[in-house]
Image (cartoon, rainbow, N blue to C red; front, side, top):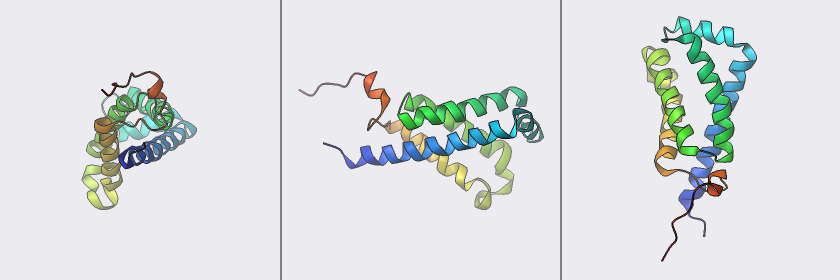
Length: 133
């Protein structure tokens, strides 16, 4: 029987995955050089490498999140990205019209990190369920 929280985490997983996927595709389309320059302007350490990493994680992680593959691991990576975005890019702007959306994405990622999401997830084929006695 489907529990309400399973459907809730499924919705969070789909929306979070789609959001990161679209942001990653936007970075890829504008060109990695543009992303690297922007990251350099934000004073992000190792901006050249971070730009590749963030773009890759957003695209591949977004796809993995949508299909429910390695959900907790991807949620961890998304959390790290959002903490970096808040600290390096948006903190000085303030909460409103600054990092409020980043906090929401961070909270969604952390919720999936803690709770996981097994409803319609590829992880179900790779993780054994504990048998009820």
